[in-house]
Length: 266
Ligand code: FPP
Image (spheres, rainbow, N blue to C red):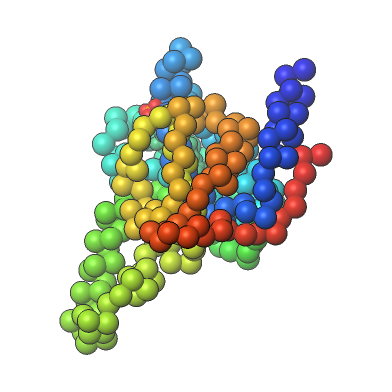
């Protein structure tokens, strides 16, 4: 039976994961939905719908294996240039998924955060974003960051403006600006930088995603399109990450994030 096969494949790979070195934070560029939908003889939207069900599986597996933060690129500042029908489809999809899933995500103790310039969205959608954050804010074991209308360059410009304002008002002196102060003004200031960036669909670029935060992240690129990125593919990325030698610019290997986690696919 198909389901049984895929479950047993996951079991096989799960035994290869070093449970003491699971990445703390994984960022994902979920690419290839449109192509997958069209390749299957359907529409790009069909691919986005399938992309949502893949995301749900990856969220649950992430939590199960002890990852603390999953940050996904759902809508970039550049995605507004897509045909209006596709933009509308995606915005409606966010709304529908939030309506349908928020209570279940909360029951599963998942905290939701939206990262990006939310001011461009309709008031209705903004309310749903805020509501999802409020309902889940007490869940401190696992956070899902959903980057919507997010752009790395725009985020850096935002920080630069805030620092300029603080300097002009006398709150800080320009010479006091350092990495720590800069980081504290990023939209991700509550989180450690991603240990691992996963990009699906084979494109070898970071597409304006988390430009500051990815400075020392390990990068894993797979040709698999997002709608086919199943739990097994995710585990492969983690196993690959665990084989890396992270030196952060030095010469000694730094042990990958050590987290005590225990999980089983029983
Ligand atoms: C990239 O594929 C995917 C997107 C721009 C949208 C991703 C969104 C989801 C998976 C839905 C997430 C939903 C929630 C509520 C977080 P693409 O369209 O660029 O594919 P292509 O490269 O084949 O054109």
